[in-house]
Image: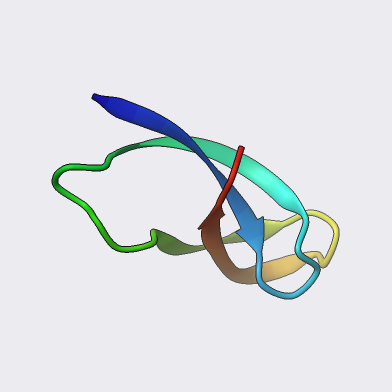
Length: 50
């Protein structure tokens, strides 16, 4: 039921985090502000392919 997703930084496009998501209940792309170690700031991370 839950699918594995990767969270990629919007600025540098690096995949820093992984998470799970219920595709039946949450159909749109997931986005959250998290710390990017490469950019060294909090940036928006969006869902991408694993």
